[in-house]
Length: 244
Image 1: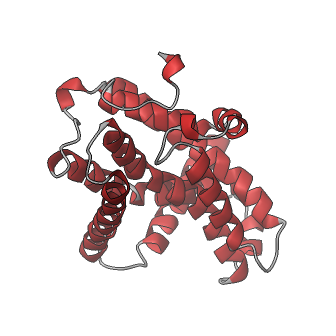
Image 2: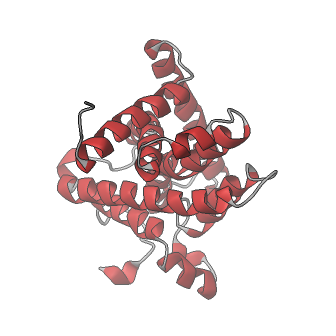
């Protein structure tokens, strides 16, 4: 007689296995040390490119916008990995590996499988976040001081942000499932649009009025604003100065 598992036990087992699978795919099944080195080199190179772009645009003048820019750059990889990565993973299962039908019809909650894959992708963004913040603190002298941070506020904001990223990932996946052929382009298009609208690299206040209204309805906008307030307090430009 086969053992019977509760729904919660099945969810947890599915989440664990999906997380492990997502992590192995993300690391390309390589040695953990090599993947760790790659995880450091990639975000550091990206941070250098973006910072040089910032100084070219600002002509070398360092202001409160630099902190805004650094925090947005540090946490945006969570969106790329968690939301866009979930969609790319499902499209890869369908188009490349041809395993989607087997996973979907297996006796597991498919949505839990998606959450596990998304969380594994988001975990890989932790190195990018840490490297960018450290680079901003020690090289660019952004006022990221532990004593002035609201750690509990930032931690809660990060948890809520990851939740919203996973939820948006479900929306992108549901749209991608209905597209064939060019489905690969859809997550990139959504990510690029959100990158411009959600206040990742410039305040929402510089957007036209219609886009500001749209930005206020997107959870990622409020998440990035909360992360900046938790890490930098009043030492940064706000997307929503009226919020206090």
